[in-house]
Length: 369
Ligand SMILES: *Cc1c(COP(=O)(O)O)cnc(C)c1O
Image (cartoon, rainbow, N blue to C red; front, side, top):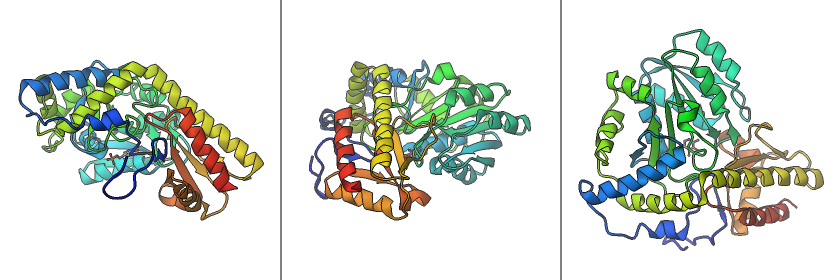
């Protein structure tokens, strides 16, 4: 695909950890006439989106759709779910964002930070919540900055031991790629964005709130207006949105949800796990044969299926690898923030398959040589 702003890439070459490559049919679905957002047409479209999204989120709850990037509904989670004081579990840049949002929304918060590349220990969560004074906990499922996967069901079951504490999860690079069961795990709020593992154009975010969360939301002041979930809920009952939706993106979403339904979520989770396993295997082999000291940044057992962060022994090599791949027509992610000099990331999420990944790894081997 070409763009008016520079050369586009052939399919199978865009491996950023978001935004991700979009299938032609999904992109083309936007080329349909815009419809009004109060008629029967939008209700039919919303009904179709709800069924597809409930399948993706594994929920029977309504799925909120906001015309905003994922951070918008992250803020909704804080405004609608936190009464006074929250515990922010931090193991990278995106989990830190919840604390920044809490500060912006004038909520009190405590940060529990573990070193980048490690997952949060559920035992620590139990110890901290036992001290009392928290009414919500935030965490990131797949921490995109370090490619680390937190154990959401284990943390959820710890949070559930405490009365009146809500569990708020960012699964922006999880949902649609990493296994997630909103209802069965007892998550109170989970948010994702369109442009990550769902392989949609940027511009939409999706979230589910538990009944407990909505009960609390109705009592909270300071919910704001654009991200007031009580208004979202009332409109969704009528299969509508509170404000003008990006309806052409809704068309793309309907198309992609159909593709996801045909693949099945189980196959999608397995495909992402296979992409991650292949990448980890390549890192280990390449470290042994070519680049001693090269390693998968995230701790074993806590690696995200949708993205891999690869650490290099020499500072400055991260940007060199990304530039070398760019010359060969591939786009990879750089190391995030403080990891920029000595790491790079492969976003193997969305609709990529093993054959496409193998081509990336072949070229990477050449670049590293
Ligand atoms: C990309 C990302 C976000 C931010 O999403 P936006 O759509 O840019 O607002 C938040 N959390 C995680 C884990 C992400 O990967």
